[in-house]
Amino acid sequence: MTPEDAVPTDTPEDSPATPGFEDLGITGAVLKATRELGYETPSPIQAATIPTLLAGRDVVGMAQTGTGKTAAFALPVLERLDVSQKMPQALVLAPTRELALQVCEAFESYASKMKGVHVLPVYGGQGYGVQLSALRRGVHVIVGTPGRIMDHLAKGTLDLSELKYLVLDEADEMLKMGFAEDVEQILAQTPKEKQVALFSATMPPQIRRLAQQYLRDPEEISIKSKTATGTNITQRYLVVSYAQKVDALTRILEVENFEGMIVFVRTKNETETLAEKLRARGYSAAAINGDVAQVQRERTVNQLKDGKLDILVATDVAARGLDVERISHVVNFDIPTDTESYVHRIGRTGRAGRTGDAISFITPRERYLLKHIEKATRQQPTQMQLPSTEDVNSTRLARFDDAITAALAETGRIEAFRDIVAHYVRNHDVPEGDVAAALAVVAQGETPLLLDPANDSLSRSVEAENRPRRESSDRPSREPRTERRGRGDYAPYRIEVGRRHRVEPRQIVGALANEGGLGRDDFGVINIRPDFSIVELPANLDPAVLEKLRDTRISGRLIEIRADRGAPGRRPRDNDDRGDRSPRSDREPRPADREERPFRKPRHKS
Ligand code: AMP
Image 1 (cartoon, helix red, strand yellow):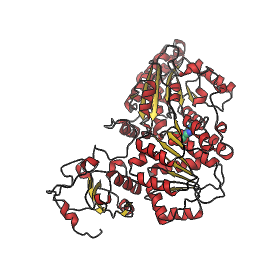
Image 2 (image 1 turned 120 degrees about the horizontal axis):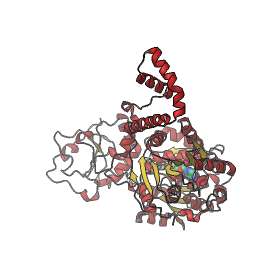
Image 3 (image 1 turned 120 degrees about the vertical axis):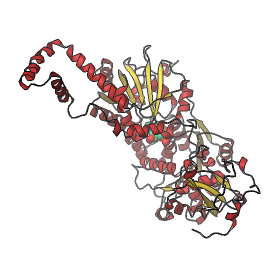
């Protein structure tokens, strides 16, 4: 049973199952912004969350990046925002500064049609000055990492007494990064009457407890996906960054043997821009989206059926129920916001008993979606390689040969040119082979026939993204990895918090990652001692990062980080490569642990 059984064929616009944002209670400037962004329909998490939040209820949402969860909480906040009130009304807590910035940008785009809305990112690693002056001027929405928000609260520079909305984004990640205490303190220090929305990809007991303690009768929302796809569809995926997608698609178009293709994108605007880019590269491509009038849409679909058009760039709404046998390939240029859409999209190929191919572009952050796709389709998509320049070139040469063969078959037209060529050969005394080559130059024009393999940065960067990983393709974790850099790549740094201060490795990782903008690969062994800790960070750490980290606090204590030059020949790892990463290795140093001594001496700050 495939989902299209439940969907009327070829009548996408009358489908009753498609409420718009206005049906969810979004109005005016906010609604206008979603239209401008090209959002056609709310994603499932949005459809479920927006009315609940607008009705004033707390929400616990199981949702991950890529599901549209940011708009699910941002739109209801903006819908009810009192722009005349300059004290912070909404606070979003996010685990990392990257996410904080991303959420901030999303808020700004959703508020682009409102006047005078101020959204402020507040994260570690950024100077306090900028944050303080913005806070003084007045902000409506703050998006921040828990550590820095706590710092502002402790300093008295952030007044949350008028807060109405609090969102915990990626709550499980925040806890993993050691922010549990900060999050709880923030929850406890904000007005009782606020509305709280908690989003988390997973629901470990700790999160449930948090929700029970701090949320009021929350509505639990999790989006279940339908399953099943025909086994006649081969699913492949390629990991690419957003910027590489157009070039990657062009290469795939060159080497894949496709007949008709649908390329799915997320927004209406993107259908137009991508179709235009493909036309500029010589493909017959057209855009269809929910704004395209029914007549025009039918005309376009008929062109695809008749082979006058090869590529449709479409949104989910526009392609609903589309049934064209010629579609041999579906490309998810953007992976959809839910698996149900994925299943429906790939079901546009493999029609009428044919086989079909589905290729999905996955950005590195979206890797975890593969697990969901596998579950929903009961098939494991296979990882594909970006076609190399050699692949492209051999395809181009084969096509070149085919074109000659095809032209030779047109005997009548060949006859007319034979005399002209013979005349040239006689008068210029040039071998026929040279004349044929010269004609190929004329036919080819300025564009080179072949790509230069020496000049192939695209392959190199895509290959790096697609290298097999030791870790599963699960959600990215910000815990330090067990797979490590080489020995010489790390240098030890001393921080003035240790076991006595009840510090745990994940708190250290969380604080340093946020304040210094470090990634999880930047952490080596973390060795927690009674009074201080030694953390391995990249040997080539930028001094500016160290400077930024100097004011970092963990468990309320200044960490006073500095390079630890220690004693020559010391063994900071206790012969245990895992160091103190896990509570398991959180043991007292052995008596023979000579490296402990040099650190005991008072040191001067470097
Ligand atoms: P998020 O899960 O919030 O990170 O959103 C993932 C991506 O989906 C972002 O690029 C959003 O702009 C986009 N997006 C969110 N909601 C919609 C929607 N209703 N229609 C199309 N795209 C959306």
